Length: 172
Image (tube, rainbow, N blue to C red; front, side, top):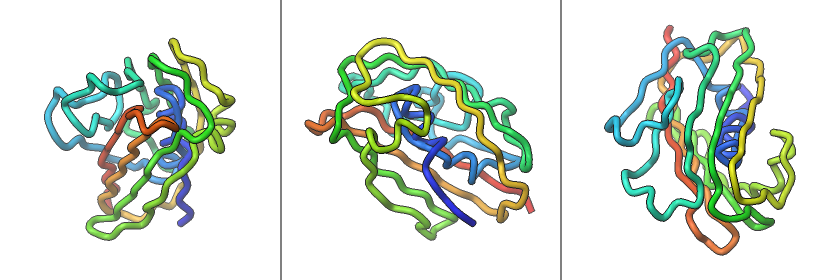
């Protein structure tokens, strides 16, 4: 199974940038962990990594996944809206991790500006309101199990952009 970061980058890009992750990891059942105060508004399995969002450069207004839950072998439409308090420039980065149960499949740091073209944005991404719609194909064959995804994003000067996490469960 090939794992990449396009829907995660897609969600952060509208919200600002990150990945083909849900394209590879979306399944028949999605669930949230943590409290409702952390949940990202909309029809999605995402939540903020922390309750204190006062320092975040990105305010995520809504993320919708259509259909939710995604269906293997079908298209998934990601619609996201967010507001940037500052411009995203070269050097902004996201730390991405994907776990399958307790096993870490991916742990990498990606330059956001190297990946925003995948979601039809270009750096610098000016401050203000952002809207993103991205369609990705969900693979037909997805190994069953629980996947935990985390993306923690930062500007070039290490100012915190946002942090998203979600749990995707594939039924047997």
